[in-house]
Length: 424
Image 1 (spheres, rainbow, N blue to C red):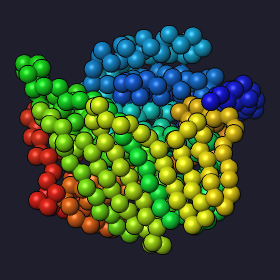
Image 2 (image 1 turned 90 degrees about the vertical axis):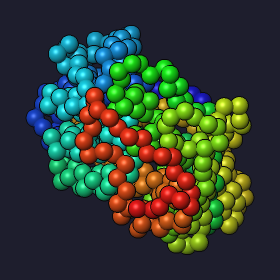
Image 3 (image 1 turned 45 degrees about the vertical axis):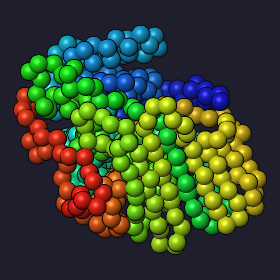
Image 4 (image 1 turned 60 degrees about the horizontal axis):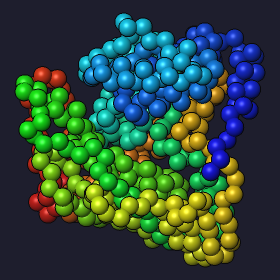
């Protein structure tokens, strides 16, 4: 697929900047949009690159991570991008390390903060950003438990009150190919939506290393955070961390209205030493009008891989991911034939344009509710029970510790057992 030419966007930005000598935001700032990055892994580095490409006057001025090596690699990578390297302006004094480094980035007074740490930390980080009056790009998912979701929903309202932009990392919402496809569905191209079936079959993202590789003296907390994808409190499990993209498309197709209830299955087929996540899920949601949605995901080596969406309507079907472009067959035959945008770049293009225009974007509610939809599926699979939306939203199960000591002990909860693990 061809990617959209960015020259038009750059011309718009230049014209906009010429008309507005300063960013019209919750803060008084200069033409430069200062950017802070929290989480310097691959996704965070990608987000920083896209933020610099989104606006000709954006500058990366502060970064945070738990690992100095991550910071060095990230800045080295960003420094090799010739078009934006000159705007990587991170003084050594603004390369912050540790669990409190996110606050130091915020306190350095950037205009925008990019949140790309493990999702267990996101409710706290997002709340701190909005309380301080910062615009935010927040990766998905936004939490790993219901208390985190409830905190985020409160933060989302604060962002609205403060006229702050909050753009979510649910990138498919910024993909014009999928936007056009869903517009066809909204126009009843397949009649009434009856069933949505989504697959997310992949290899493991970050397999758990053997316990024997743990360095002598490394604390429980550090070991878990360095291997964050294998612990539920940090990643939310694979349905919540990765397959949530498919969950979000389901939510989108259902007009972001919640389901009535969910039942699900899941478990661990391939043994893993340490960690407490599953390697497969299948969740079944029922909606008030009787329509259903099914999400199936798996993370195993040597298996069939697929990331597709099959949408069944009363008068046709829509298929996404099986072939180069989405297609509709039935009452109306249609195939996407346009130029596909780079959806990761488009997220940042829209965020930075919103600052220049003083027209805030707030994706926060759907960021929270799509995340909760995935958490709801995990709850149903872990407990073996039917879980309602109200139960999921009001669950009192708190996965993220109130206090996290980098050098401290941190017990790993046993992997959930359906029929034994209780809903809280």
